[in-house]
Length: 270
Image (cartoon, rainbow, N blue to C red; front, side, top):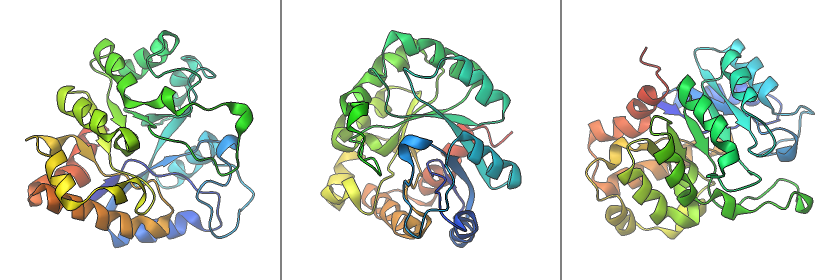
């Protein structure tokens, strides 16, 4: 079954892209998002020796230009540090969407509205990290607050910017019930089920997933995203398949979560 991975990070590792491409071919992943979070996340997911690079927007742009049919970039914006001009810059450079992570204030802080307005104007889907953050190297001086990234703070954003395409990364992790309510009630909010293997999803059983994904259009609001090293993608697909089975999704519904929803959201159909 064809897939689009909307949540994958560029990893600072030798031959990473070659290995990722082989894995994508093995699992019919037509396109994969690439995200570079820069120096604060240096070493993220590295398993086989650091290659000395920095996975930032520049590095992502370089790979996307080399493989435009296989990768699309989501530019990183740190809310409270970057301003709305960066949205213009990333759009002009060809980034398909935006990634928000470790904001200085809550996601619904008024000072961020100009950024959301431009993302809405450019029709750039926005992937919001939710859940507790684990840095590759501890960063206590940054005073990161995961409370700022709680999915409930996206409620006001969705109402103020009804055309903004909001994706809740990791289904809120510890706040998955809130995230599920948001994607059910707001037409412009979606979620991926990404995470480490098995990560936060290990706490939920087949019965839990059947109960949680009860609403009729759930298969239209979930997107496939991995957010792991390339060598964990197979296990993550297995987890998605297990969840889809628990939810009772047929072949057509599975096509939605793996491919059609993302293709429509990122306008790959055009």
